[in-house]
Length: 155
Image 1: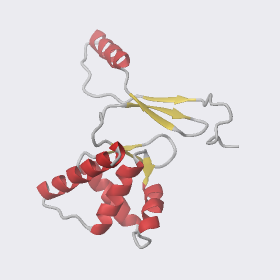
Image 2: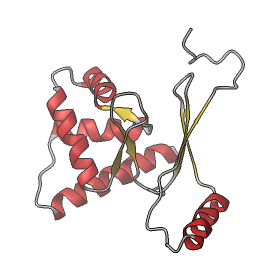
Image 3: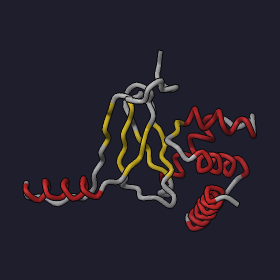
Image 4: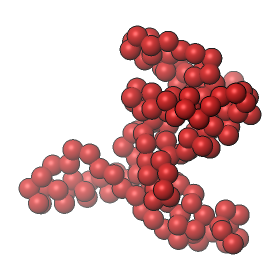
Protein backbone atom coordinates (compact mmCIF):
# COMPACT_ATOMS: atom_id res chain seq x y z
CA UNK A 1 0.00 0.00 0.00
CA UNK A 2 1.44 3.39 -1.00
CA UNK A 3 1.73 6.25 1.49
CA UNK A 4 -0.95 8.18 -0.42
CA UNK A 5 -3.35 5.20 -0.26
CA UNK A 6 -2.66 4.95 3.46
CA UNK A 7 -3.43 8.69 3.87
CA UNK A 8 -6.70 8.27 1.95
CA UNK A 9 -7.63 5.34 4.21
CA UNK A 10 -6.82 7.44 7.29
CA UNK A 11 -8.88 10.33 5.94
CA UNK A 12 -11.84 8.02 5.33
CA UNK A 13 -11.51 6.60 8.83
CA UNK A 14 -11.45 10.12 10.30
CA UNK A 15 -14.46 11.10 8.18
CA UNK A 16 -16.49 8.08 9.35
CA UNK A 17 -15.55 8.73 12.99
CA UNK A 18 -16.59 12.39 12.77
CA UNK A 19 -19.87 11.45 11.09
CA UNK A 20 -20.55 8.93 13.85
CA UNK A 21 -19.69 11.51 16.54
CA UNK A 22 -22.10 13.97 14.87
CA UNK A 23 -24.86 11.34 14.75
CA UNK A 24 -24.75 11.14 10.96
CA UNK A 25 -24.64 8.09 8.74
CA UNK A 26 -22.32 7.36 5.88
CA UNK A 27 -23.77 6.44 2.51
CA UNK A 28 -22.23 4.68 -0.46
CA UNK A 29 -22.49 7.82 -2.61
CA UNK A 30 -20.99 10.00 0.14
CA UNK A 31 -18.11 7.54 0.57
CA UNK A 32 -17.38 7.57 -3.18
CA UNK A 33 -17.29 11.38 -3.18
CA UNK A 34 -15.11 11.66 -0.06
CA UNK A 35 -12.71 8.96 -1.23
CA UNK A 36 -12.28 10.73 -4.58
CA UNK A 37 -11.80 14.08 -2.84
CA UNK A 38 -8.92 12.77 -0.72
CA UNK A 39 -7.47 10.55 -3.46
CA UNK A 40 -7.24 13.52 -5.87
CA UNK A 41 -5.69 15.61 -3.05
CA UNK A 42 -5.87 18.99 -4.78
CA UNK A 43 -7.89 22.18 -4.71
CA UNK A 44 -11.02 21.08 -6.52
CA UNK A 45 -14.35 22.62 -7.45
CA UNK A 46 -17.67 20.85 -6.97
CA UNK A 47 -17.99 20.53 -10.78
CA UNK A 48 -14.54 18.95 -11.11
CA UNK A 49 -15.24 16.53 -8.28
CA UNK A 50 -18.60 15.65 -9.84
CA UNK A 51 -16.83 14.81 -13.13
CA UNK A 52 -14.45 12.52 -11.24
CA UNK A 53 -17.05 10.66 -9.18
CA UNK A 54 -19.32 10.15 -12.18
CA UNK A 55 -16.54 8.02 -13.72
CA UNK A 56 -17.27 5.51 -10.95
CA UNK A 57 -20.96 6.20 -10.34
CA UNK A 58 -22.66 8.14 -13.17
CA UNK A 59 -25.89 8.63 -11.21
CA UNK A 60 -24.35 10.86 -8.52
CA UNK A 61 -25.79 14.37 -8.76
CA UNK A 62 -24.33 17.83 -8.24
CA UNK A 63 -26.41 18.44 -5.10
CA UNK A 64 -24.99 15.30 -3.45
CA UNK A 65 -21.42 16.38 -4.25
CA UNK A 66 -22.08 19.92 -3.02
CA UNK A 67 -23.72 18.72 0.24
CA UNK A 68 -20.82 16.31 0.83
CA UNK A 69 -18.25 19.09 0.33
CA UNK A 70 -20.23 21.25 2.77
CA UNK A 71 -20.18 18.35 5.26
CA UNK A 72 -16.39 18.00 4.84
CA UNK A 73 -16.02 21.71 5.62
CA UNK A 74 -18.29 21.38 8.68
CA UNK A 75 -16.19 18.43 9.90
CA UNK A 76 -12.92 20.40 9.43
CA UNK A 77 -11.68 18.09 6.68
CA UNK A 78 -11.84 20.69 3.89
CA UNK A 79 -11.48 24.45 3.55
CA UNK A 80 -13.36 26.46 0.93
CA UNK A 81 -11.08 28.77 -1.07
CA UNK A 82 -11.77 31.41 -3.67
CA UNK A 83 -8.79 32.15 -5.92
CA UNK A 84 -10.52 34.78 -8.04
CA UNK A 85 -11.85 32.35 -10.66
CA UNK A 86 -15.50 32.93 -9.86
CA UNK A 87 -15.84 29.51 -8.19
CA UNK A 88 -15.12 27.94 -4.84
CA UNK A 89 -12.40 25.32 -4.64
CA UNK A 90 -12.15 22.93 -1.73
CA UNK A 91 -8.81 22.21 -0.12
CA UNK A 92 -8.47 18.80 1.61
CA UNK A 93 -6.83 19.38 4.99
CA UNK A 94 -6.73 15.94 6.56
CA UNK A 95 -3.27 15.30 8.00
CA UNK A 96 -1.87 18.68 6.98
CA UNK A 97 -1.49 22.14 8.41
CA UNK A 98 -4.75 23.99 7.74
CA UNK A 99 -2.94 27.33 7.96
CA UNK A 100 -0.74 26.87 4.87
CA UNK A 101 -0.33 29.54 2.21
CA UNK A 102 -0.85 29.50 -1.55
CA UNK A 103 0.94 30.64 -4.66
CA UNK A 104 -1.48 30.87 -7.59
CA UNK A 105 -0.23 31.12 -11.15
CA UNK A 106 -2.23 33.76 -13.05
CA UNK A 107 -1.21 32.14 -16.35
CA UNK A 108 -1.74 28.41 -15.89
CA UNK A 109 -3.87 28.54 -12.68
CA UNK A 110 -1.64 26.03 -10.89
CA UNK A 111 -1.94 26.31 -7.10
CA UNK A 112 1.07 25.53 -4.94
CA UNK A 113 0.77 25.13 -1.17
CA UNK A 114 3.64 26.17 1.05
CA UNK A 115 4.58 26.94 4.65
CA UNK A 116 7.31 29.45 5.42
CA UNK A 117 8.17 30.00 9.07
CA UNK A 118 10.08 33.20 8.25
CA UNK A 119 6.91 34.72 6.74
CA UNK A 120 4.85 33.62 9.74
CA UNK A 121 7.41 35.15 12.12
CA UNK A 122 7.53 38.41 10.15
CA UNK A 123 3.74 38.69 10.10
CA UNK A 124 3.70 38.22 13.88
CA UNK A 125 6.34 40.97 14.21
CA UNK A 126 4.33 43.36 12.02
CA UNK A 127 1.16 42.68 14.03
CA UNK A 128 3.04 43.22 17.31
CA UNK A 129 4.59 46.47 16.03
CA UNK A 130 1.06 47.68 15.31
CA UNK A 131 -0.18 46.60 18.75
CA UNK A 132 -1.87 43.34 17.75
CA UNK A 133 -1.32 39.60 17.83
CA UNK A 134 -2.09 37.32 14.90
CA UNK A 135 -5.15 35.13 15.37
CA UNK A 136 -5.07 33.64 11.86
CA UNK A 137 -3.68 34.52 8.45
CA UNK A 138 -4.43 33.93 4.80
CA UNK A 139 -1.66 34.51 2.30
CA UNK A 140 -2.24 34.13 -1.43
CA UNK A 141 0.49 35.12 -3.83
CA UNK A 142 -0.61 35.63 -7.43
CA UNK A 143 2.37 35.16 -9.74
CA UNK A 144 3.15 34.85 -13.44
CA UNK A 145 4.26 31.48 -14.72
CA UNK A 146 7.99 31.28 -15.43
CA UNK A 147 7.90 27.66 -16.60
CA UNK A 148 9.15 27.48 -20.16
CA UNK A 149 6.54 25.83 -22.42
CA UNK A 150 4.13 25.36 -19.51
CA UNK A 151 1.52 22.83 -20.69
CA UNK A 152 -1.17 24.48 -18.56
CA UNK A 153 -0.76 27.98 -19.95
CA UNK A 154 -3.71 29.29 -21.93
CA UNK A 155 -2.82 29.93 -25.55
